[in-house]
Amino acid sequence: MKKLFAATIVLALSSQAIFAQATEPENTAEEESGLTLSIIPRLEGSAMTWKYIEGSDRKFSLGNTMLYSILDGNITENLSIYACFHLLDKEPGWLYHNTFRSDECSWLDMFSLTYSLGNFDISLGKENLAFGGFEQDADICYPYLDLCSNSWHNIQSFLWGGRLGYNLDEDNNVFLQCVASPMSEYPFQDKLFCATIGWNGAVGNDETMWSLGVMRTGDEFKEYQNLWLLSLGDRYTAGNFSATLDLNFRAFNPVTLFQEEITSLLELRYSFPKIDIFAKGGWEACNKDEYFTYFSTTEDLESWNFDGTIVPQYISSNKDYIFGGLGIEYYPFADRSLRVHLVGAANNYANNIWSQTNFGPAFSVNAGLTYTFDVNLK
Image: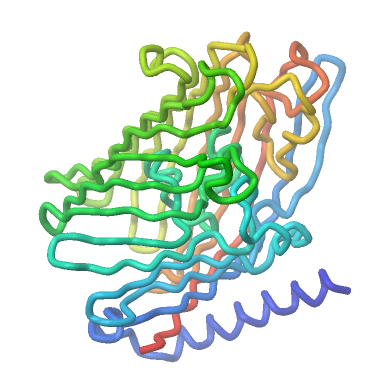
């Protein structure tokens, strides 16, 4: 009954939003500069297949179905807010139990207040860890789960803390971020934190999201107490075409930063007035199988199961992870508030937690719709 009631709410919001969008005039520039609450229902289904040596498994999932909300804009001339609320999920039981924890996601993804003073921006609250480039930066109501990297699924990136930024100009910002470490149960427990310096900018047709950080793990062994994170995100845009390249590196020693864990992603996209077509692929490697890494573990493999996706729970040091897919998005409205998608994905890892040698390919086909309904609050 609860699931039926939740589905009814989502469908009702979608219908009301679509009708409102079709009948209301476009927002003025003055309205857009104020405070906006976005209601974002997403409904989709995914058919998945895993191939093993001894056979195959098939399953249907609701994919990234959810009810999401984003609050964005100016409260005063100098104070702004950006907040993301994960209100409903296909399995909503976990959402409202971990609100103030650092090691788990919850209904409150982000709640960040920013005060601008000249060229300086000071932000406090719950932020997205400045790591992972353009893939990590996207609000989670929009990505396609089977085309997200293993590290995107593994790293709990919504963390309490803040940042100090300096605007070199209107397109370039350098910043220092300090947030709680996801290795602790509660924010800054045992003085664990993540410290990151970064540059978000634009030079000509190129956009950048670069960062270098260190994550305190609280491990008993000194050599594993600091996890270094380097992220190099670049996006090139020419007319209706864009190419996005994210390169991410993780290591317990900065000297071996390019040798331990690697994530690389490439997305090519072309936008027509009402249709986008895109291709996305990635390569990830774990070059060590000792102790703990984000990609592999010898403990409780079942807990690493990403239910509803074909993304593997872990990556073996004996086999690199390769994935890719194609997608088409249809936007019937001029403001692109409604997105209808069809996406196919594949990878070289069957989602099998019990065998590190019985790897095979996995496939999925995903279809659904996402609607963004904006309400101007001021």
